[in-house]
Length: 297
Image (cartoon, rainbow, N blue to C red):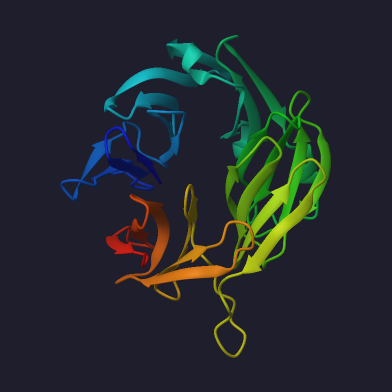
């Protein structure tokens, strides 16, 4: 979920199934609407540079302008195993890693180079050769760190991030994150650092050495010992973290992860997006219902 300042609109997805598509919230009118994405299946929406979004659906990936979200400016799609570009391929900017389904429904990593109009596929052999439970685990998210020359890959129900060589796709190393096993919401903060949540913990990591710079467990277990997870975070001028089980949003000091603000919301927030210096929007875990809140100034 992200805010496009030029249109004052928050963008997200409506999730899975027949009605899957793009979800929009007009922050000025306080009104939501939906844009259907043909093909159904799973739809995910990501920010793709200033004024652009990337929409991943069951049949391909498109780039759209936030000002005209109904229109595809460029599309990457596959036919008989070959990837093809439609529209303006230059919009794919720096080489972009994506996780896609390959043969036998296995997940592969592809590196998209729009200006060169090439797509390189890498098999994730390390996953199938590793000690994973294939019934419950699989690669879920990836993040490029171009300055370091690696791609980070998260696996469901695992606290271990796998680092791959950007060019060869070969496994280089592993980064063990504090927390209970559920890495996600990977975000590059600088050329060498990135943030992630890991089930109940928030982490800041140096990608050059794989070292944890800062971490904090933000959701205590429910007595006697039932683990509870945090939601996603928004890290811009303010660092905000959603907590569905506590029904609140935390404001953290970005250097220490110390809690410096807390605001309760009506529902169980899983996604959060700052819409001003102190106001935020959340979407509820399971239902996607909207709640608005603010930190004290």
